[in-house]
Length: 442
Image (spheres, rainbow, N blue to C red):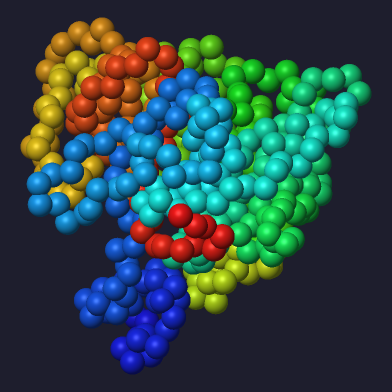
């Protein structure tokens, strides 16, 4: 057990105290029971709803249940309309949610906190080299962990085009990435992108340039990323994930399971997301067979991150130590089932018994999966994972959004969503109520 007197905890800075809650359960109980951290509720610890992007580019809206009468949580301003941004009419019509991370959303040219209606405009993107085979900003990934630091970052992840002039393995080592950081001092009143170098760990690559360019089933606007314990995981070309350890300036290529690129039965875009234990990956095969994979990593990066958690408050990479280690990993299949019988058995829409968009864990929350009915629908799309529970959100037959409790094979109806265009992106939203993040303003 980790023992620490109350008077020591009381003298810690607010963000250090927030990080101390993650050290061990006994510290978390002391901090919460004695109300040492009055701002704990400001952290993104509650699922509020799902951002849904319809078409490209369109900022479509927010899927959530209405606030119950007498709820303790105030309504979130700025979710459904972003009229407070410094956008002209053309930019406003083209607003697109690119990424979400711990309460912040990334648009094409802004980082926004919908809960506080605060935002910052990104600097102009770095120019492409004339005739280059590399697109510098194929995918944009947002990094933010308010329990560790108020600072946030945006990574521009490159992708390669098919051209005869390129050869060799991709990505190279070192890999040069353009990064925006709220910690970087602006030049005058202008923010800027900086170039960072990352060295490859291990021998795995995405393949040769030709293999990467010829791979199908991947587009930058269909890609998701996860920021977890100091590392950024991004779904990239040729059925791969690149894991970037930010503080170490290292990266590793991890092959995805399930062969999304080569399997013609996979017609729904896969989903890389964060859930209860870390990094998860969902695949829909055929009409309604669902696979859920968990990335298990046998390494000391988690422990080294935790051991220096408090010391890493002011660092962009959290508390990661700078030692280099060869990390082993494997994808663990947590769930593999045909959801036809489960969905055919039906599901019920229940009253919310907890705070909005939090689900009751009682066994009577939905119908039994044992009835023998013929299911004539299909899973249209994976909408994401619940960040704190073993739940995946699915779009059933382009009609209803359901929460599938995959550890119990039960389905909960969340409501109707009928749209004319394809849902291109979706993000589980956990609001962050911390005001005045660096560089942000109203």
